[in-house]
Image (cartoon, rainbow, N blue to C red):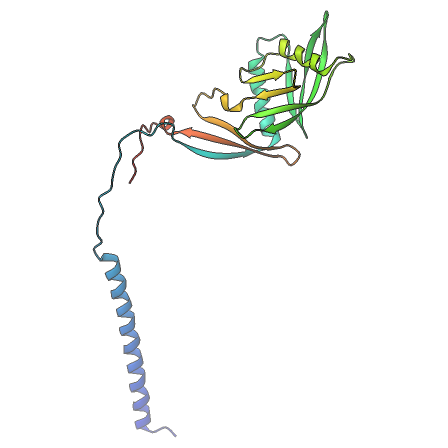
Length: 212
């Protein structure tokens, strides 16, 4: 049976434990306050006011075949607004260009399948896989010569009949916002398309950078 003396001892132990814990908490709080308000040595920043030309920020934009397809054909419609010969593009497992070409005194349907190859500089080469003009049996090179002659293309698209390919200089596109566009990846089968958008600082009204 506990005596009154034992009870006083237990109570005394709890008091010691309580005040010790309280003191420890106060010490920790004091240390944190000291760290927060402790004066630090200030280093004077070095500021360069010289403009940094050509500086830009880059962003990777991912999209789908359907979105890109709609954009391409909307652009083509604008390019061909006053053209006699129309064509359109369908992004499938490859690039399918469909249109019409004048042959003799009439026009015949054109169908060409192209394999996109992304170059290191961000441009694309569309390598011809198969090509046909109606039921006519014409050499592929000759068909592409007709394409080069009659189909209106943007200035940054070049048809190369000799190599049976189309060079798409995406990096030379004239974008009104002054952004620069380059191709990162085009995997049509996996529906994995990515483009790099470079935004010059001057476009955002930033004439110079300050380095701290």
